[in-house]
Image 1: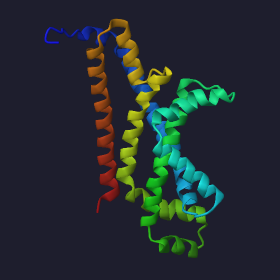
Image 2 (image 1 turned 90 degrees about the horizontal axis):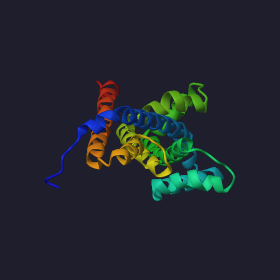
Image 3 (image 1 turned 180 degrees about the vertical axis):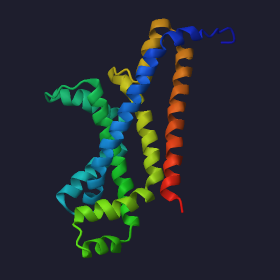
Image 4 (image 1 turned 135 degrees about the vertical axis):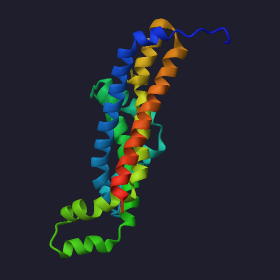
Length: 220
């Protein structure tokens, strides 16, 4: 290993491929978090209704999402759906699986946030003539987001890292692109060192964005 010579020029030649993979990683992260959030908000409300059929369905979703490997969920989306006649490509399969995973985790995060908001807030909003939907949208959930802000930010990072599993189903997100690029030149160390650095930069972007939003949310 001490005699190993690094050839960074091969990485430079494949930089457009790595940047394309990075863009795909960021795209899937953003979309999966958005979809997961839109699903988790109503799911967190349903899960609070003890004993209902919908509550049990949501509970099962959360249990599967949180207690099975993410790779298993990706395989179920990509290979499992094909077994019942639903053929989907690697991109929608990964997006579906990570959105499913995000929704499960975020449901529990939002449920904890809802429990932290005094029930009198909802009652007061309803007494002013607001519908339940409006009361949750304009009174309850803005407070919930402040409570769950940091766990939510952690979930964004988790979703970003999970996109690397797309390589297992042939998707050329960042890790998949790096794997393909190194297979052309067999310069494994160079490509994965640069790939790790890119992941770190994306993580730092999320961290900086989190700090910026936190200052705006929690100032005063």
